[in-house]
Image 1 (tube, rainbow, N blue to C red):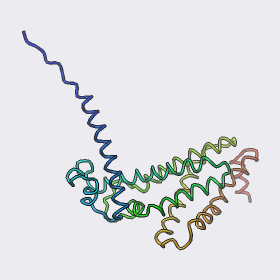
Image 2 (cartoon, rainbow, N blue to C red; image 1 turned 90 degrees about the vertical axis):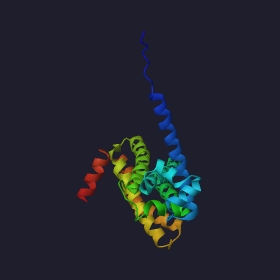
Image 3 (tube, rainbow, N blue to C red; image 1 turned 45 degrees about the vertical axis):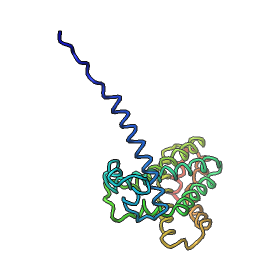
Image 4 (cartoon, helix red, strand yellow; image 1 turned 180 degrees about the horizontal axis):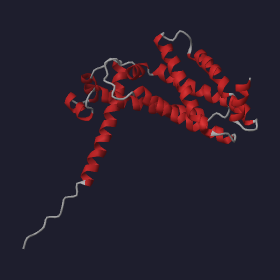
Length: 227
């Protein structure tokens, strides 16, 4: 009698391998960040592999090239900024203080992690199949938008403005922060944070005014148009 060999279920094996690969990529990304912090933003793949305790071919098994590693490092860096920013912003109730907290967290982060910032933002030799800086901005702006949206809804206002406002804050602060680092911090972080907060607050203060007006933000915008 012919015996039929049951099919081999490879789904579990594949899932275990995928999980292991993702975990290993996370570990190697963390090791790369440590190496960048220690050796500077111009570090090469060979030095990153040595710092991680693996050979260069092993590193390339998990990252096809430096641009893929750069993307992973950038995404991790964005998550770090967001992890620090969200609780700092969420714990203050007054809107100006929330803007100030977000700005200070970001400036403190890039000032204190300069090599990592330069690796992510200033890499002229990277083949950019994706823009990791835009990915980081997406990550941070999305987190801020959730906070802004909650605050708008708490005031009975349309939360549709939260996402463009969040991108405006992130883009403005990132651009000025980059200038600040490139010019070797010509003013203190505290002074720069106050300048940025003062400038941005002129727009965000409209939240409070709109909440007291019939029609909310739409009425506020109509008032600006007729001014």
